[in-house]
Length: 344
Image (cartoon, rainbow, N blue to C red; front, side, top):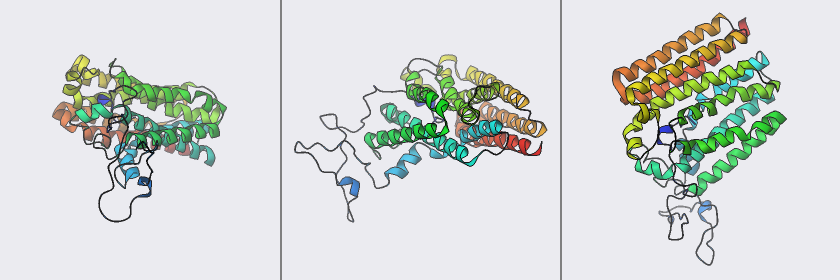
């Protein structure tokens, strides 16, 4: 994703190719300050006698943090948070304790920030060649790679600290999502199964929240994981349709490249069917009733609408199907489960 955002462009230069703007020694160098007014403090970094700057280099503009959050589509956290809350609320059988709710939220937000930052860093050169992604902050040099790497490092440290607060089991298992988020951008060079890996990364969220509450494994969060994985992989296939020609030209792997656009829609439909079945089974095991069932029925309508939009208008409507409907799906499932827990 984008973690939601977008897989089809996720190809990487080598792991060391994090520098989009370089001098002759391979060091990122921001331009001198231009214009009047106060010079930003972060640019007052003295150079060494050899002319080399200190390790941390600020973005090229005065709104680096804003550019960073816009670039990683921070608002897309709405896709993952409701499912993390769903796992937590089901584990707690209602409203969770304040501290655990807080730390689950912190863990989710900062993990996604880490994953998206790594995605942008690893994809920096490919994004610069793709007409759809060439306007992103790193290709346009609105941010320096070192700034983004620093943000990624800080985000993962906060995530690990959150895991400590959520208990020993969460801390022990925390390397798993970190590893998956790190290898995910590389997978598109080798396999069209990268869509499924992205689904698993987001699907871990309800299971992690469940473990934070109960500290035990269960089929309920397992089925939620399967549902989220199928749902995300399906809409990631939709999203990758936008880069079909680009991926084929540069030898990148995706379901549309491997099977063609028509069959890709069918595969996405199958995955969305698996998602609905998994979410239904999870609700049954958790003892949820009619309200949750009504929410799933509405979700089924949303998924059908997504497919109809793409069959009717094609890839030109991918953005609408991707953001509007998928944001609604995650929120509806969570609210339906919450209402069922409170009124059953």
